[in-house]
Image 1 (cartoon, helix red, strand yellow):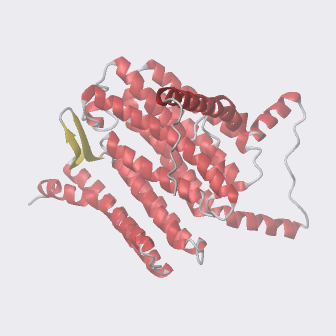
Image 2 (cartoon, helix red, strand yellow):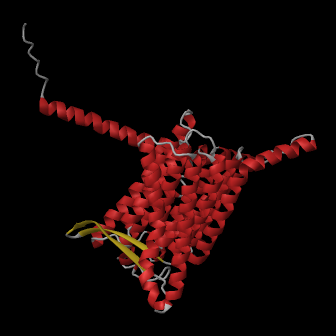
Image 3 (cartoon, one colour):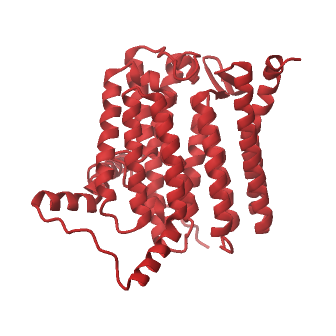
Length: 450
């Protein structure tokens, strides 16, 4: 049997390994935690190392088989979740140039950070909890990267969001991590709601959530938008809102520095490398949908450039290294989003991969960099020169704007959250009045005499 004849037989088998490997590890670590079994650190490290190596090797094998067989678009259909006349929910995974690149990047960076975390988290009380959430994040990234339907994407999207928020609150004995994790979770909820509404619209229009049906079953990025312009505008707008929340684009940028409350390994792989790029990945996946609408194109470009400008200003005035790196990451994410809007898909993908690798290195290096700086200052006999104080009125205004992070958190609280809470409170009072009017005055209860 020749290589070209063997490839179609091996593709479904090898293609499931990158998904099954982290799923198995989540089950092992999760069940151990639920039944109260405390696994030794050495056992957890070995399981994580084997999972990452197996997943990475299978991803490379899948890429090699696709090259040998001349395939650029391989679909693995795992069946239906729900099958109702007119509405079908499929489990489908797609291997193409975009998903394979994201898959290899996820396993490579998560494996490196997992090795770093095995030493960084040594003797921490929540060691097993950290790696359970870490593995859940890996499974979510793999699922989202390979998703061929919006339902499959939503499941991976949720796993990434849940694990990210719980790791922000990892040091739960202090109030600040829990408070910041709640803020992150609220923004993620807005993003998830937008993605869920996009899935509802897709099913309402075509009864299925397949990206192949939305964009035609063509190898990425050669897809063509298969929906009317009005539907494309609605679906694309909801997907852009979902991507903005997940990638901390303006006006949702306030959650990113708050996420730095988590351990350094989670900051490196989640908010510096993978999670913050997931929104950009979604826009790359639906790039043909964006390109068919001038309005969506303009929105994506404006959103990306505005985020890049804001983050570049904010990064220059941060007083801690992790916040500075988070805004530096956001600057590049904004540029990547703008590149997607301009239609430079391959350039944006290359930019995403290179930037994720760079930020992973910088976040992992951050603790030792601070120590090296202190050693350098001790050797010099004094502190290193500080940045110059702004002198002009414009500079002071920009400095204030950057220092307060664009007042985005305050604006969202005052103009979105507070009015919404007041509206819900008014609805609650109206419901109570309507219920009292329908039920009438309460009937006094009779007390039996003893």
